[in-house]
Image 1 (cartoon, helix red, strand yellow):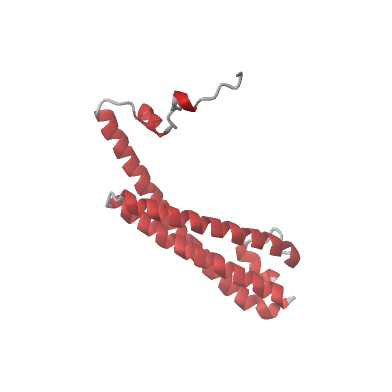
Image 2: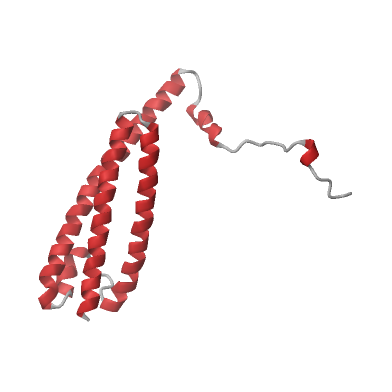
Length: 158
């Protein structure tokens, strides 16, 4: 049974490492927005999306382990008390590290979101100042309705 408990702590360690990488990406995203570097922002967003998918996979593993360990409804702060006595220190250390890592990630993610929102509002102001309704300007993201050439059309009634 100790193997399952240790596997869960390893899994939480992987979650922490993923959050650390997401924190770095959030910092890079903020820097790219401040430099007005859309190419770098796009690259960071792609990496962030891959890390988010990895995080989803870790969550699926976690959801399988929790019932096996009888940890349903156990929060991170209560995790050490739910572990066997000889593993409580390791559980406490893992839970504390993950909690701190998450707080750091949240701070960087909030900063990146705020920076993005600020720049988007500035773009909307520029568009409005040019006499264009920003809501109508977003219509350019719709797929164009392009008719195929006449020689490519097929008459199914024939």
